[in-house]
Image (spheres, rainbow, N blue to C red):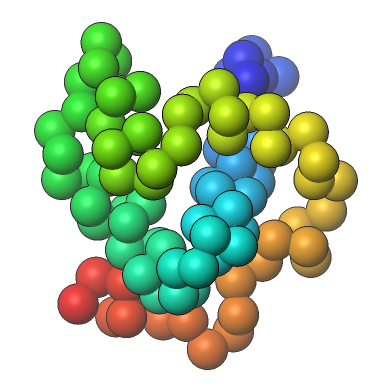
Length: 94
């Protein structure tokens, strides 16, 4: 997913984060726990460019390659992956 030269507004990144959340929810995680994993737990690992894929596997339970493969099954429609309106930033970062 090398779209940084095409996607100047990071739409692809947002979509990928929302798909990651959807995949984690499908594995049985609650919506708020899913976003905590993404925006809190993963970010607190201290992952670097050289080892972030290892931390990805440890936190989320599947490889980056498996995640990229799962992206293929999603249409480019934010309505399919948008979180519930009841989710708040406070729930994620508490």
